[in-house]
Length: 138
Image 1 (cartoon, rainbow, N blue to C red):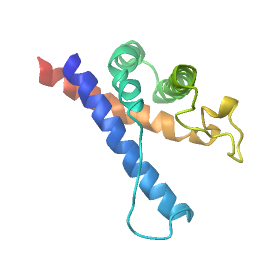
Image 2: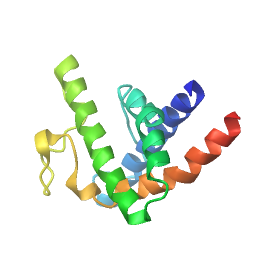
Image 3: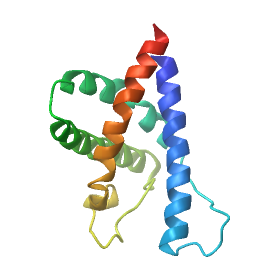
């Protein structure tokens, strides 16, 4: 389980760096091809917590239709993103991410409504990865 926590934390960090680099470039917020992305040290345990929250949820949802699983993953990722951001905000006095200026709106600036399709796809993509990691540990 500890290995999977580290794996998910590193995977989340890497994905966030790539995501921020590419979205900045293609949205016009970066006008060069340096593709500089970013993340936070605080994000590592949030991504690592996939082993504690996502894996048991995936096991429970296995028999469900993929759209049901996708909807549950969306709500779960939004809940963890909000709670994790809120906890870091309360501990440090600063928001680790702030989506307040989003044209879509954002509760307390901590989640993005326009990730309506991103989080379900991430959840579904993690299913075979979770199964592979569990098989690897046996």
